[in-house]
Length: 611
Image (cartoon, rainbow, N blue to C red; front, side):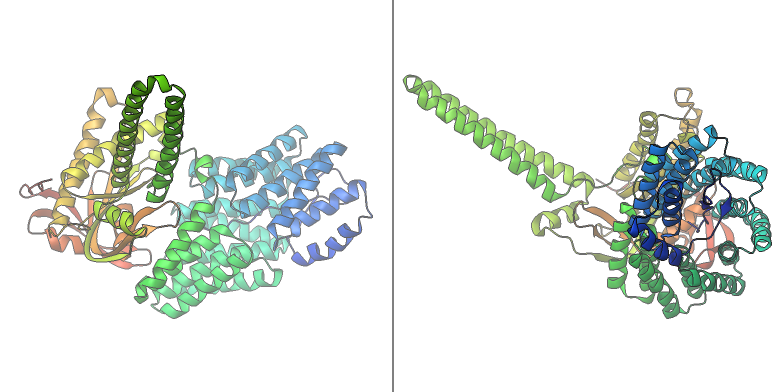
C-alpha cells in the first residue's frame, strides 16, 4: 500500500466555519501542550486548541486520539457542530494510523454526516476523501474512486486548494495501486501543480514520493531514487515519520533491483526502526516482510524466518480489515493447536471427576441399594472413559485436518515443530477474477457458502493427487507438492490437479443450478526450495515460505483467466509430458525478467498416486 497524504483541516479562532488548511508540525503540538496543561482558556478557544493539538500531535498517536476525543465531548456539550465534525475527522485519522480501520471508518462517516447537515462542503469533502482512503487501503478500488470523486467534487466547489490537491493525489495513488500508471501520473501532475501554487511543502513531499514510486514500478530507478530522497528530506524536517517509513521500503526495493543487498537491508532496517519508535503497526509489518525477503536472498534463513514471524504478528494486529471489506469468507487457518485441545480435555476430565464424586456420594447415601449403586457407578465410569477416548480421537483428527501428519506427530510429541528446508517443492496459487466486485453484492453467509463450494472441491482434488493444501486467503487458494513424500513427480501431479480445477470451474459456469457462480480462475505454478514450519506461539499455523512461494504467487498474478502459467523451473520438470506455450520473458517486480509458459494440455495421463 502506497502512502496517502491527509487533507487535515483546522478551524480559525472565533470562526464557526472551516477556513484554513495547514501542515502538521510536532513542534506546534509541543508548544500548545503547555497552554493546554495550564488550563486557562475556555469556550471556542478551547475547541480551537484541542483541534490544533489533535492535528499536530504525530509522534504520540494515543495522545492525539485523546485530544480528538476531548474535542468531540466538549463540542457535543456546547452544540458546536463544525468542531464536532472536525473532532470525528481527527479521531478517524488517529485510528487509521494506529491500524484500527473499522473504528476509523465509523468516525469518518460520522464526520461526513454532521458536515452534510451543516452544509459545510469543505469538511464534507474531507470526510469523503478519508473514507475513500480506507476503501483504498482495503483494496476496494471501486468504492475508493467513488468517494474520491465525491470529495474532489465538493472541494472544487469550496475552492480549497490544498485539500483538493491532497485527494487528487490520493486518487492517483489508488490508480497506481491498481497498476494504472498513466492515469496515476495525470492525477499526480494536477496535485503537484496545486501544491506548488499553494507553496505547500508537505504536499510537495508526498507528491514527489508517489511519483518516485511510479518510476520504481516502471523500472526508472534513478528517477525514483531522486524523487523519493527529496521527499524524505522534506518530511524529516517536519518530523512526519509515517510516510518516511513507506518511502524507505521503496528505496530498499530499488537497491534490491541493483543487487546492492546490504544497502537495501540498511534502508529496510531504518524503516523498521522508525515504525517501531512511533508505533506504526502496518509499517512494522511491511518492513519485517521486506527484511525477511532480503535476508532470504542473502542466504540467512534464520534471520529471514524471525522477520517473517514478526511480519505475521503485526499483520494480524492491524484490526478489522475484513470488517471494512465485508469479506466474511476470510476463514482463519489452523485455529486449533494441540495445547488448546489439551486444555479442553482437562476441563472435560475435571467435569467427569465431579460427576463421579456426585455418583459416589449418592451410592453411599443409598447404602441399602449398594448393589444397584455400584452397578451404576461402574457403568458411569465406563461411559466416562469412552467419552474421554472419543474426545481424544476427535482432537487428534481435528489436528490432522489442520496440520500434515508428520508435523502433527512432532507437535504432539515435543510441543514445538522445527522448521525444515525442502530442496524441491511445487507450489500452486489460484485466484478468482472479479471476485471482489461479486462479493460486495452478497451477504456474509452467501459469500462463505460460495467460497466453500469451490474450495471443498479443490480440497478433494488435492487429496486425489496426494498434494498438501497450505491455506486460503480470501478467494486465493494455495497448495504444495513434494513436502512429505519421497516421490519426484510432484510437478506432474500439480499440473494435473490444476487442469481438474479449471475443468470444475468451467463446468460450474455451464451448470444452470449454479448459474450465479460465474467466475474465471487464474492459476500459477512454480517449483523450487522452500522452508516449512509452524508459525506463531499461540494459535499454530503451518506455512511455507521462500523465493519459490513468492515466484508462484507472481506466476498467478501474471496468468490469464482459464490458463495455467508456470515458471521455467516447473517447465523443465514437465516439458516431456505436457504441451507448453512459451510466453517469452516478462517483467516481474523484484525479480526482473522471467521466462513463463502456459500449459495447454497433458500429453498422456499422469497416474494418480495410491492413497
